[in-house]
Structures are given as structure tokens and as C-alpha cells.
Length: 178
Length: 415
Image (tube, rainbow over all chains, first blue to last red; front, side, top):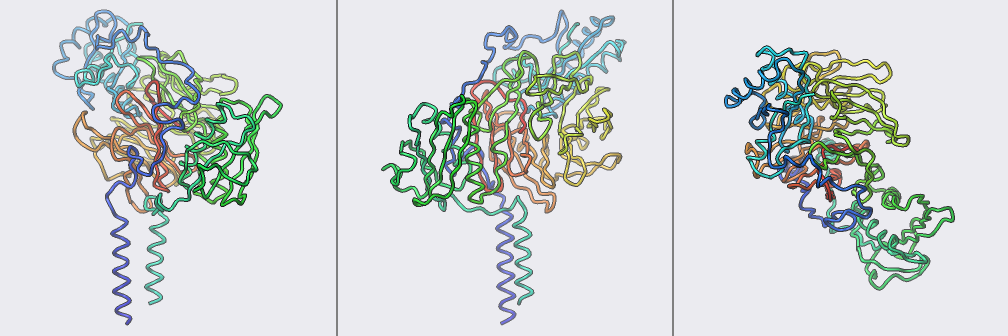
């Protein structure tokens, strides 16, 4: 009798444990399988009270929405690979020209990212890109104290389309003159 | 035999106490609830109030909510013909309080018997959705539901409106109420400065150096806290609001710093030549953060004045943001090695007590997870193409809700 109870208990324990270790997602944020509502006022309309301001659809900052160079003057923005902050071989010529143009000037380097992730890590990636450009400039003889840096994360895209080419243009460091 | 049974019970209880493994009743067991407008003079607001309450009662997750509108006198003994199946009835009447505000009387009936009655005063009609949230909170508390203190909190987010332009917005968790509190600049990483939500921190990216400011919501007064070349972010605020975890990069290297608001001193917590960001206070006094020290972003922990670093997450190869509540972590993980198309960023909940991991989202780009102050829910950003939504996950009751933002893209979020 005791053996039977022990066997039964062990089986129950295995069932409990195997049930708990399911790999299936317990919650699906997109499916709303339980029939929960989206928004208080139906999907697509969350304006019981309308937003106070609208997007600046006609803002002049949108002029570069197709991917123009984000740097000032004749300076050229340096592009980077996805999730990388080392200067690519095909950007070395541009770096050399930029270094000559900024040699006796103060310069601000703005690191930028594509739209995948608005978290701190993405901002840090933008900063590391700016820092890589700063190191290259210093190695070319530019005074380190004349260089400041800022990471703008995903908040300053020069290209707003949803394409690989566009995202590649946004992963960049811009040279800004004071 | 008794020993075996006790052993099994202990196993079951210890696993059941783990938030990542909680087993929850399905929707089929929920009681039907209907909502009735008992306002003497129905209005656009009173009719919309049914929708607000229905949305909130769905989130409460104790009922199967009938969202049909009906107007029925407050003390009527009969229900609307539409609501004959309802076991629970929530009636409300909105009336002028004589002082420029709105008075709301509500009652909850179960099979005709009154369970709960309360009156509220709403001073600003545009805040009506917060009244609905308060009613939902009170009914949930009355019926002994899982705590939902977060439902009454204000959500703070940064909305990108166009390149180099953003604004800071205060809203409710459904985005029904939205108020822009700062615009005309380039902002990021807005975060509540205290539990009372009377002040906030944010980063101004338009300054010569990224600068963290504190702003009082009532007076609008702004005070500079600290600036840093490259990056300055307020990542977390301690429970007593006296200490901050910041990401600063004075030499171009992003590291985590502890900032004592009383003395104005900062202590460097991490020191690594790669990326260390997103510091979070943990329940045991340690600090969790994201680092790429193993060649990819992952979650680690350390302590003040200690160089020892421990890896906290052993799953996924790209875990680049996190939020912590006591011994729970929620983190974002990239699911595939594909760079873009079809890529998925999903949220995972890790119990540091047991090591168990539960995936919270199934697909899409899910970012910026943030525990509520009571640890009962997780707020996050869901990006779908150009559209951002705010998501709320009640992991304790296996429910999630998504509320789309009509205009702009959300950069950061807090509550």
C-alpha cells in the first residue's frame, strides 16, 4: 500500500513539474486571445481626449527624409554596420577628408542609430560610433579638446522609409559645426 | 505517507509562489457584468463613460464584460432588456456637483443585491478616464482581485514627432488622456522623480552636452541635475527618491553611476571599455545593468564599491534592456540573428529565486519594459511599423493589453 502511494505521489510530482516547464508563451501581447479590448474607444482611436499637439508634418527638419547627408558644410557623415561601432574600410577616405576640414575647428560629433530599439543600449551604440570617429580624428592630429559628442539614438533619422538602405543611412555619425 | 504528501504540498506551494509560474483561471469561468448609465441627463461624456468603464473592467479581469450601452435609473429594480444575462451590474450617474465639477455615484449589484456603493468628485472633465480607473480599482479591491494600484498611475512618455523634435507627454495607461508637458526641444528618457509623480527627470539632447533636468509638474520649474559629454540618462530612481542610477559617459565610455541627490555626489559603479547602461536597483541592494562585456548585450549585476560582476541572464544572445522589481527581472531579447525583416524583440520575465524564465510576448518589436511600482504589471512599448503602442502585461493573471498611439513614435516610457 505504502509503495503504491509513493509511486502515485511521484507520478503526480512529475506531472506538476513537467506542466510548469512548458516552453509555450504564456501571454501573447498581440493576440489578445482572451477578448480583451484595445483602447477605451476601439482600435485605432485612443482619443477620448485628443492629443494636445500634432506631429510637425511640415517641419523643415523633415527635408532630409530621403537620406541626405546629415553633416554640416562639406563634411560627410560616416556610416556604420548594424550593431557595430568600428569604422568601415569604405569610410576611411571620407574620414581622411573630414579630418583635414576640421583640423583647426571645434566640432560636435552626433552619433545616430536606426530605429530598432529606443533603449539606452541603442543610444550607447550611437555614442560608441561617435567615439570611434573622435579617436580617428585625434589620431589624424585633431585636438581632442575641440571635439564634443552627443548620441541622439533613433531620434534624428535622415531617412524615414522602411528599407534596409534607409536604415543603413541612419546608422551614422554627423559632423556639426558650432 | 504523510511525509510524502507534505513534501508534495511544499513543492507545489514553492512553485506556486513564483510569479513566473502562477496558474490562472481562464476567461470561461468569469461572471457576466453589464454597465448602465443612470445619469439624469445623459450626455456625450456619460455615454463615453460606459466605454471607459468597460475597458477598465476588462483589464480588471474578474468579469466577462458586456459593452452594450443602456440608460437605466440608478435605483431601478430591473435591468435593461439588453442586460438580462448579467450577473453583475455596474451603475453610474454623473451629475453637476455645483462647484464646477462632476459628481459620480456608482453602485455594483450582484443578482440585484448591492455589493458596493461610492461617490466621487471629478474636478476636471478631461480627466474622466482617471475616474473610471479609480472606480475599477475600488471594485477590484472590494472583490479581492489581484492588486492593481498601477491602474491609477500616470504614464510618462517621450514622443518623437519628427527628426530632432520630441515632446514629453503625461497620459493614463490607456492613452485616452494625453497632455503634452514639454515641447519644442529634443528630449529623451523621461522618468518620474518620486512615487507621488509630482516631478520628473528627463534628458535634453538639444543642449551642447546631453543634460539631465528635474522638472516640477505643477510649477513647471526646471533644475539642471548633471550633464555629460556623449550621453546622460536617468535610468532608475530609488524607492525613497534619494538616489539615482545614471548612465554617463564623461570620456566617451558609457558607464553606470550612482548619484546621491542629497550630497550631489556621484559614484562610478561600472568601469568597462565597452557599453554599460540601464542600471536598475534590485531588491537585495545590488544593481542590475546591461553590458556588452561578453561581446553581445546581456544583463549583469554588481554592487556599490565592488568590482565583482555576475551574469544574471543565461538565455538569448541580445538582451539589451531591462527593468527590475525585487527578485524579478524583465528583459528584452532579440529572437533571431536576422538583422531586420521578420526580426522579433520579445520580453521575458526571469525569477532570480528559481531561475525560471517566462516569455511574455510572442512576436513583434517589444521594447522598454518597466515594472509598476508594486511589481504587479509591466508597461512596455510595442512598435509596429511607424506606429507605437503602449502595452500592459499583468503577468500574475496571464493577461496583456495594447493601446495604440495615434500620432508619433514612443521613445521611452515610465509609470
